[in-house]
Length: 561
Ligand code: ATP
Ligand code: MG
Image: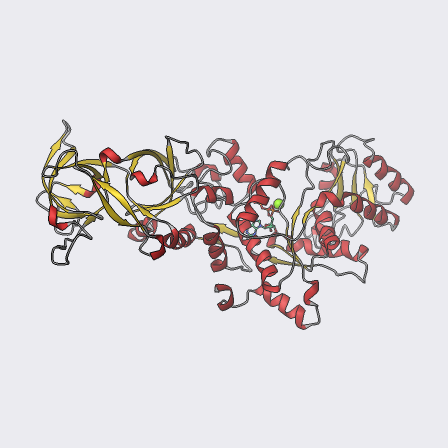
């Protein structure tokens, strides 16, 4: 629905214009092209939603293409995780493609370029090549190997392919223009020697094509109509076009590269390299640690595909980079969980409460509504007894009139249950309250009888019955970084801004209906927030993650400053 009402983004305008100019709808094809060198993060979600969103809008196929040209950093584990994440987000790709499937074709084309005098083998060190690049205002220097004969180039290139040379001995370069104002056009490297097995082609190859050489050609092979990438590739477009100019068959479709801005999220980093650093340094417990901005981390934390898609749709795409506040992402998950998450009661910082006029050993099963936002969710029973836990912060011996919770001599309603009055309390040696003694009004039970009998009191507290409570491990998360833009500081490393208190593990008490909860199940712990069952949960040891608090406590704090 949202899709219909929002206006077109600038990429959609480009596609619309192409259609108006005679481009056929049938030839539209998109792709999402991750490099399998890490797990996908929330920035990638924007690119996924953009490309697959276009596929849905125009009923066009979208490929999932793995840009796997660097065997040193890529692994099958990442390929599998990426597939899981894209599917989980709710998208279906047309074809699963790998740049490595095009290695032979790319090699043949490279040979073709050599034959046309448009590529040569350079036998200088990478340092020497770098030192000849020049500067944006000064032309580069031509390599002494630039004018090698076609025969010599062909022989050397074949030798590179056959594993006759050590890494670094030679590279293949495109012969373009060492004086170009675009540094990327100054005879870019197309192939380097790497004696490393590849996760798919194993030891078939010991030369690997560079990203710039591979990417555009892969789009062309797949006949992708619109190749969308992030802005850092804008200067690469000229090179992308140059390569296509040399090879394109005019009867075939020529892909069009267009750029959009990377999305950054506040209080975190969205770069696979930096996320890998967090994993390898042990700051987090793996790529799917619930504090990570990875899709798998967000999923484990309790984010839903809908909430991430709605977030991506709301921020849309832009032509300029900016930082999106993480509270917007939290807003979307809260909004979705509010609709779908059953309400339950849990106490995280327990204070014992004894109802002195309630019969010892008695229990009552009270009716409780599962979700006021969703009538079809039905009701359940929660057990009530003489001894309950409430939250420590819900009781004060004395408090002013604005404190609508429990204080000595004051009354509150227990959610789904009775009105109680605090009569006295017991303290430990340090003066901390360790027990509250109350009396209850037997006629005040909610849902029991007439309206007159239901007295109104200001406060309602959640609680759990002590003899029925299920003990659970509860993991509370805070932001992983103390700074809104941890990687945006000139003289400081993003690792300097790690929040040491981003994970707190506590023991909580939950109502017995949760005993059978399974990993992934989601709940609203009333008055506390949204929680889900973590994958670490096993029978007899429940583990919950706090997905998000009920309200945006950070926004409130930040406003006060
Ligand atoms: P990283 O720096 O995290 O490794 P990347 O761009 O190198 O990112 P790729 O695997 O190459 O990662 O990205 C796949 C696609 O997702 C590319 O089209 C890329 O432009 C896009 N993408 C990556 N990061 C973002 C982001 N933060 N916002 C929007 N799109 C992104
Ligand atoms: Mg990359």
